[in-house]
Image (cartoon, rainbow, N blue to C red; front, side, top):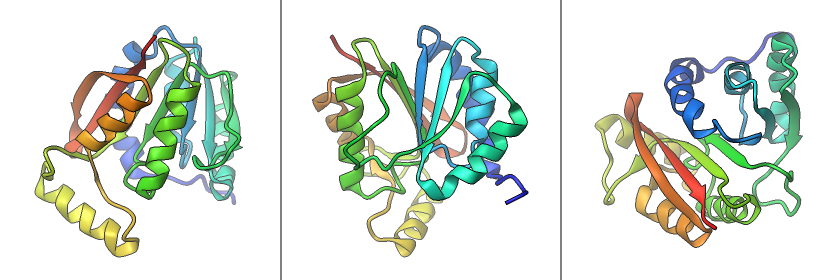
Length: 198
């Protein structure tokens, strides 16, 4: 692979997401990014948050592309990807923050349950979890485009789909995570900021 992978959605949403992370991660030291995808978010956020160490992760097939972005950026605070399937037994350790974007509608619901539970287990008291993507509220889509996106996801795999905010909140609360803020974002997305209780 010689050409870096490129996701237009990452390019479009990186600036509004960063505006929130500047505050949400201001007192954090090591961020685990779950599902780093192309690597675009990692290099953009790590460059703007030099006090942080940023640990990328994804399934093995995405590592080559992430490494191309990291190699070009040459940042000393962003780390090569570790292999992470959220259902696996062994997770990275030592992080005090988690970021994930556009993952929960791709994973089966059983994996969402596992991911949020493990985040709650491993974050220390005061740890922060920032979760970006589309969500339904009161069982309803927030826009016709989200309804169409959900249909498209389920055509690819019936286990996929936009998740209900209330169901995610129930999982988070069981995992000891309290919602700090629910931000409206461009293109009918949200950014949920959770903090570990204790």
